Length: 457
Image (cartoon, helix red, strand yellow):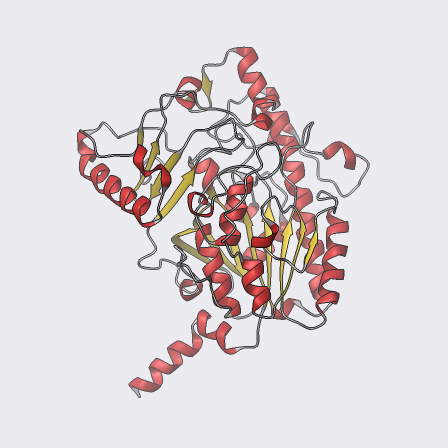
């Protein structure tokens, strides 16, 4: 009887259910510069019914972290399963920054293609070299804010797969900034666009509550709603082609919102992001509070598909076994790694996150913190500059631009990471432990920047 019960438990586990069925299609949806501004994460201003429905159909992670808060490095880490200081994609891929992964990297598209999957990407790629991420189909010229066109491209891709299992990445451009605003002007006459009253937006803790910031956020929310509409159109395509029941859908972002205090930082606003997974074998309407990292996505997708991994070791692990557990044991640590966004923005940082603490190490803290060009030019930052504001919401402008070597936060009492406890004797033991664990991680991942974080004298 005991043996039979053990078999029953294994058979009913999410990992076992996925493994025993036929090969699953995998659709990875990557939003561009989206934070947790979604209805399923408690935002009452945003319009996101399709993404919220996906959360109800599957598992919503409350403590998912990107391993870096910059577009190209994040996407490279997601699709390689390696931290940015491991895969070599330290910053943005496009010229003049021209960052690329090491030529030996074998990303998910290559591994799954070798295993018989039909692989494709629609929209934003922003990762290189293509030889490391060898998709069958790269549809990069798609107008990435034309969500209806992207859905049509997805239909063509699935038909071309011709009954082969497929891995499809949907790289939406929304809600990334455009040269002006968020590209909303192009869709001004579209009756489906969701326009937001600036007076009703939720101003996050890291921004001042001013008219300029509210208008900027309202434009952002409109872009989020358009991206959500695209997700709904993608679901319609999968349903029309009879693929919905055989497809695992994963929804993530690449980094935090494109506003000062978020994107390119390792603060919560920069790397504490949405992650949803739904599909056959996945528990429905569940909330998972384990500390998980986007570095775990590649091992998870390899686990779903049963494809072989690369010859080198991946630092993450599959989260399939914990999909049915709201508070999984042993899932209590995430790491983050940042070098620069644009090539002129060197500001290396490392971080370790646990349920209790977060430690951020600013390896070249003597420098003034640099802002990405799109953040510098944003109406929000220009308003801060022109008005001479001293505060960015709950953090001072000076504290944002000039940081200490170490920042230690007690997440249980300070989730917005505003009170640095690194010099507080009451937290000395916690700081010492995190220092040791962070340095051990740097050693284990062959971090070239480890030399900048040495033992205190």
